[in-house]
Length: 387
Image 1 (cartoon, one colour):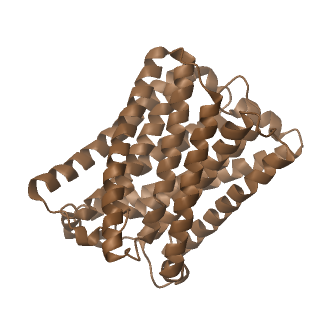
Image 2 (image 1 turned 180 degrees about the vertical axis):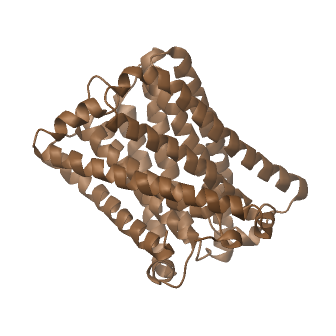
Image 3 (image 1 turned 30 degrees about the vertical axis):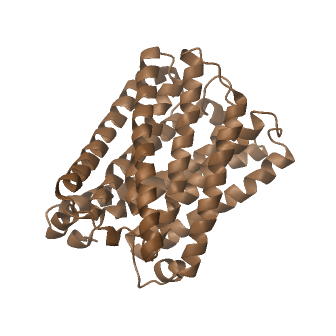
């Protein structure tokens, strides 16, 4: 299927969502499989658990299958979107796009490619034996990948803002949603990527570069968050939300997850190499605040979409298609991932609940439910768009 002028950069959200779902299955391995000698679960931890024949072996098998399936869809959709975009750049529709509010949707491209780096890291960790023994040699390449993604993100956003500041062409009548916050989502993804080597490397130079990169992009993201969310809500209060862009109310969920994980990683990095003693209680308060905000925006977004019949129109109706509907996937992934961080770093790490206890698994139920609903919507939309 070739779309040409009908293509929209928001189509990249399909690939992004698949990548996020792949990473979400890694959370089961990250938090349920013991890995005391490394900061994340690797093949050397996962494979022995897989062959033990216990309940955890079943969980590991399901997680590995989930990682593989959604990584496949991520790369398949990434290739498709990249080809479509290269054809789209030659059309008049693209020229119109880069001279409108919608130019900011180009930020979905570095956002998706930054997710690709994360997916590759997960695949390497869980499927390649002894990879962690050479991980210090891999961190510089990871940093290089995020530097490239960050460069293109900054190039797009500075071009966009420069045009608006010089020509004053921002159309406030079409800003009655939070779609402009895709730029913040992209910057946050780059920030959390930088934070990984910043947290896990034992080389203080790599550690420092990673932490600086994370704080640089996170600072930019927070600055834009204040501006964009204020403008967006002002326009929505005046005009009512654009029905098609209603899922943008949930874009704050992945932003909160990414910035939250970035802060946790930076905290661990400073504890490891900068002699800054970590406070366990701060992990509880941080994850509690972030999960609370996600629940607030989650309920608000759901009520708005139910009232304006978004699901009936853009999800259930086979005839009405909108690439923006794939924006429903990342919030579900983000809520599940942050939920796992909340349970394990916020509660278990502070001995509020015991790991593997009944309460531990009960608390996981609502987050797993959201993950399963997100998977259901992903396949529903994928089938609808015939990707």
